[in-house]
Amino acid sequence: MILRMRSASESQVRDGTSVYPETVIAIADLTRPAKAAPRTSRDWTHGPAGEPRGYIQPTLLKELWFHTGTTCNLRCPFCLEGSSPGDKRLGALTLADVRPFIEEARSLGVEQFSFTGGEPFVIPEFPAILHHALQHRPCLVLTNGTLPILNRMRDVAALRGQPHAVRFRISLDHANAEQHDAGRGAGNFDLALNALRTLHELGFGVSVARHRGKDEDVPAVDQQFQAVFRAAGIPENIPIVSFPEFLRPNSNGAVPVITEACMTTYHTPDSRAAFMCAYTKMVVKRDGHLRVYACTLVDDDPDYDLGGTLSASMQVRVMLKHHRCFSCFAYGASCSDPGGNPMNAHQSGVSPP
Ligand code: SF4
Image 1 (tube, rainbow, N blue to C red):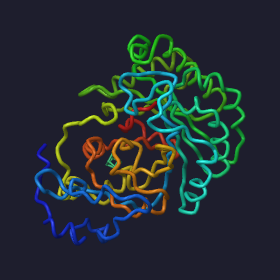
Image 2 (cartoon, rainbow, N blue to C red):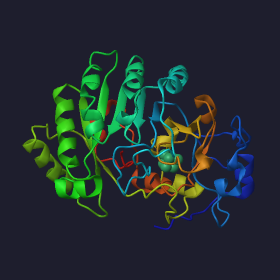
Image 3 (cartoon, rainbow, N blue to C red):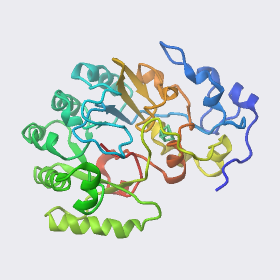
C-alpha cells in the first residue's frame, strides 16, 4: 500500500489550519507541564521527506491504563515491554502512586481502569491497587496466568462483591503447550489454562490474548483454541484477542510514513475515534516519576510522554510517528476491551504480559 498521499503544506500544519474536520485545535496548544518537550522537534510533526504526519486528537478519557512496571516472573523473548525478573525500565506502581490518577480520571469521566505489565501480580501492592480501583470503576487486568496470580488467588477471590467488576485477560500465545512453553517456559501453558478455568469458576469475566501469525487463518486458529477450552472445561465462546508482532522496546520497525492525508483517505471520523490514543492514556513510573503516555504501545519513546497529569495529556495532539502506530493505522490494533464486549474479540493489539 502506498501511504504517501497528497499532504498539507508545512505552514498549514504549523499554524493549525490543516486539521481533520472534527479536530480543530491550534498547534500552540501542543504544550505540557514540567520538563522541556522533545515534541518540538520536526521529527515529531513531519516524516523524513517533510510530509506532515497523521495524528489523533484525543477526545474523551474513557479508559485509563496503569503500567504496573516491567518486572515479571517470566523472560519471554518476544515481550514488547522487554519485561523480565527484576527489570526496572518502568518502575513498580504503589497504591499511593495510583490514587491521584484515579481521582483525576474520575473527574474527567473515565469509564474503566486497566492494568498491564510486566506481570501485575508480582507487584506487592497490586491486590490493594485493584481493590481501590474497583471502588470506582470496572477494571481489566492483563496477566500471564502463571504462579504470581495463582499464588494470590485468595486475594483475587476477595475482589468479588466489590462495587465494580474486574475481568482478566490471560496470555495463551498458542493453542498447544509445546509452542506456548517454547516462549514462556515449560509448564506455563498448563498454569495459564488452570488460571483461566479457576477465574471463570470464581465468576470473573475472562478472555484470552494470543499471538497472530502473518497471513494466518484467524477463524481456523481460534477453533483450535476453542477445542483446548472445551477439553479444559472452559466455555469455548470466551473472547479471544489476537496480536501481531510488535517487536521489542526501542526497536526500529520499518513501516511506511503515515501522513496527514492518509488519515482522511483511509480513515473516517469514526475510525479515527477508535484509535486507543483518542480515548485512553497510560500512567507509567519512569525514573521514579509518574508520567502519562499516549497509549499502551509507545512507552519506549519520550515523544509520547504527554505530561504529569491526565488533563494536560488530553490536550496533546498525538502524532503517528511510532512504528507501532502503523499497526493501529493498518490493522486497528487496540489493547482496549471496554466492557468485555465479545465484539472486541479478534481485534489486534498489544502483546500482553
Ligand atoms: S500506537 Fe496506536 S494508539 Fe498508540 S499513539 Fe500510535 S496510533 Fe495512537
